[in-house]
Structures are given as C-alpha cells and as structure tokens.
Length: 611
Ligand code: AGP
Image (tube, rainbow, N blue to C red; front, side, top):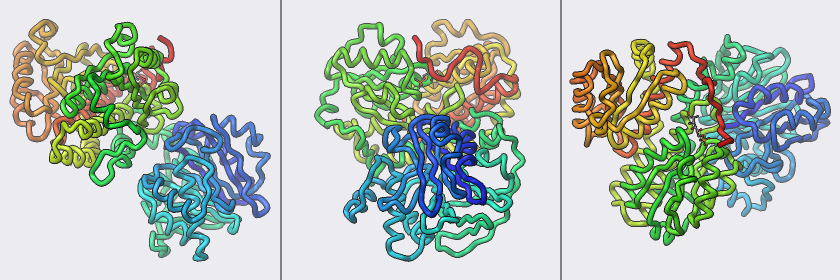
C-alpha cells in the first residue's frame, strides 16, 4: 500500500503534491518523492524517510517549479526503503515517469524481458518494470495512451499508476487495477490520488475509475477511456466526508477500515506466491535438505503475533509432521529453549521492531537455530537480522489492535506449511491442491463474511454491556478464541479470557454465572460435538451462548446457542482465518457501542519497542 497524488493546472504542482502526500502518509511512510515537468523536462526529487524529509529538500515544493506533477509516499514491498527504490521512477532514457501503488506480480518475468530488450534498471522495484514497459511500447510510436494500455494488459497483480511524459508536458495519464484511484475535478486544474483525502482541500467532485480504465488529465478536462481505448463518460460523484473520515476511507475508525481491507491484503500476500498451483517461496531460498532435516519448529511472537503462532502450530504440525510449539517471545528469550541447528524459529511480527521478539530472535540465532521471520514492515530489525524473511503485504496497520496483520501472517504460515510439507513428502497431491484452491478462495470468503457485518453489530448491541466474556474452542477454534478474546479486551476493556473448551471443567467453569456471555467457537467439524457439549455445560449454569460455526455445522450449535454467527465452509486448517473475522467485528462493535477510544486504546502502544 502506498499513496499517490497528481496535479495538472496553472499553478506550481509540487506544493500541492507535498500537501497531498502528508495526508497520505498513513498509507506508507518509508520514502517519498515528486516529479514535475518544468521547461519540458522531468525534474525529480525523492528520498528515504517521511514526507517531511522530502519537503525539506525541495523547500515545501518551492524549489521544484512546474505545473504538472506526480508524487508518492511509499510502503516498501519490492526492495528496501532507499533513495533508489523511492518513487517516482523514470524510464530508461529519461522520458517517462511513474508513481505506482500495488504489486506487479509478474514483475520478475517482465524485468527479464525488458533487460533482454536492452533496458537498464536502477532500482529493485516492480514499479521500474512498469515505467520501462510503458517506454518499451511507447518506442513503437503508437502514442502514450496506447503504450500505457498495452503495458497494463501485460501486468499481472494490482496497480494504480500516475504517468508523466516529457513529450506531453501538459498532461497526466492514470490507470488502475485492484488498487484505489480517484480523479479530482478542479477549476482550471485536475487531480489524481489514491485516496480522496489527498485532494479534499481542493475539490470534492471526483470520478472513480474502474479496473482497466484509463484517464487523460489536462488542466481543462479529464477524458476517460475503456481498456480498448474507447472514450467513455461517467457522472462525477460529490464527496461529503470530512478530512479525518476521508483518511479512513469513509469509515469511522482505522480498525474497521483495516478489518475491511483483509480480503485485499490476504490476496496481495498470497496470490503472487502461488504459481501454477504451487506455493512458490522464491524469496526464501531454503534448501530442501534443510527442511527435511528439521526436528522442531518454534513459532515466536507477542500478542496477536503469538496467537498467529497458536493457530500455525496446527497447520505446520499437521502438514509437515515437525513438532511445533508456539511460544511467547517474552517467555522464549528466558527459557533456555532447546534449540540446535535442526531447529527453525519462525518469528512473527507486524512491526518487526517488538523488543521481546527481537531478543527471542537473537537468542535463537545465538543457540544455533535459523530464523525465518514473517514481517510487515520492510527493512525492520527482525526482517533484516533473520536468515529468511517473508513479508506480509498488508500495508501500514494504523489501529493499535491488529487485524489485517493477523490475517496476512496466518496466510503466510499456510504457504510455509505447504512448501515444507512438499519438501518432506508429508502431503498428498490431492490435499496439497485442495489447500491451494482454498487459499486462493480465502479473500472471497472473507469478503462474504464482511458483508454480513450488520448482523454482528446487532449482536454486539445485545452483549456490549457484559462484565466478563469467555471464549471457548478446541484445536484451531481454541487458537481463534485466543485472538478473539484479546481483540475484545484490548479495545472494549471488558474482562475476557479464552479457554480450551476441554479445560472448562478443570476450573474455569466456576466463573460462569447467570448471564455470563460465552462465545463458543465451534467451526472445527471433527470436534463440534465436543465443543457443543461444553456449551451445554455452561448454558445449564446460566451462561448465554453466542456460537460461531461453519455453515455445515451451524445446526448443531444452534441447538444450544442463543445466537449463531456462521462462516463459510473451508478446509479445516484454514478455519481460523475465517473465524477470526466475526470475532474482530464483534470486538469492534462492542467497543463502538461502549463509546471506547477504538484506534488508540488506553495504555497500549502500536509497537512495543521496550521490554
Ligand atoms: C494486538 O492487537 C496488539 N497490537 C499486540 O498484541 C501486537 O500484536 C503485539 O504487540 C506484537 O506486535 P508486532 O506484531 O508488531 O510484533
């Protein structure tokens, strides 16, 4: 996820870019840049760091005159946050400039092709492939718009592109696929932005462009085209949001926005890594002999990241047959863990800068283990110091309560499990193919769940004033319960615990009294009857039951539950990826009904960089 902004008019573009980029910093903040056309030439300024650093270099834009420009604030996916990798990128030959939000999945193949045609690359980014591909087609002489359309047809993945060319110094071109892009209609000027927040202080009238459509912006007009380059017409929309709502994509909080982004985040994380039905983890470069020689895996993290480990334990163990343990990083570091060269430690961290996870990683390495990290922030300490790193492509997570990080981290663990299981010969072809298919379908199933959020809001309105809430579940449902309980307590401040359902009778059932809410997560078909029996036990002691079940098991839990939320059926190892969605929504709507400070809960920080 990155932020892009563009302007064409009769006043200097760079100050408008800087202002827009400041508003987009929540979409990415590891580097920033702008390019303008001045005197018929592209003039570029870009740097690693915040928009503020860029602003200093160009004196708020004053040092970069020119009335047409595009700007970018980056959240690194391909290549470290460096000056070279910062956008805008300029084509080999220096004529065309591009800003890009998204991930070009087939960039490696396109890069090879372009190198074979004589193109030289200066960065590690997928975006430089886009700009050179446009240049490649432009060299054919069919015109810039045609070149953009031809390049777009060859790019797989997601993109929103803003494009400038020296040969057309009064014009911007834009196109998109599966990444957001709006066009702002000004008075004698026009804008483009990945988010209306960037241009809201200038205009509230926008065109939303659909996938594969193209736009040509000049100061006087915006022309829209289909992918076949037929001119099309659209009715502009008027945006009423205030600035803060606009930053949140019209949602009331970053948390709900980030919950809603999960299908896209999971798709971006998974789909580039599934090629011809196989989990292809090129970035890991782990030899098969090493995988075959593993005797133990620890999954280490804190909070939500640890609960990803709790769920991953089931899929890693089941598929690879390697004994796997999820351990809190704060415990791991001081526990003299049994670790040697045949141990793999998987460190999970959104920020890559959590103090305990860093210490656990270093301890594991000191003891001779290899570390594979699953991290969201590129260039972070954990990403840099690990032997292997797999990035989740969730984009920045602003809300303190983690949601899309959980979903993308868990999705990565499925890919690791598949890759390892294949190397060890512990998975049959049919099961492998079934899981791959389910992984590909996961974003759509999450989307289905999200469309049912009103029902969850209604249920939250019934239960938001409880004093205690307990979550119960078995196996993968227990793992999802742990995360559901954390979400609820951290943003609603309601006391909440998660128990393995089979443990209830060994103590926790003493806490149940008339009206206690018990959320029974019973999606795991093999053990649904057992969990339902536990739900009956607490119900007969006065508890109210909210059941979470897969569609095929909904009737069973409905016999005992006061209310049931259903999730789509899915391969049993992937159940927590879906079960967690209603739990996140429930926590959100309970906190909303309770009037809580949702995005910044009391006492909590987004990154815990001290012990
Ligand atoms: C979860 O909602 C919290 N924000 C917290 O538990 C978080 O997951 C934990 O602090 C770990 O952070 P990390 O993923 O950045 O390492």
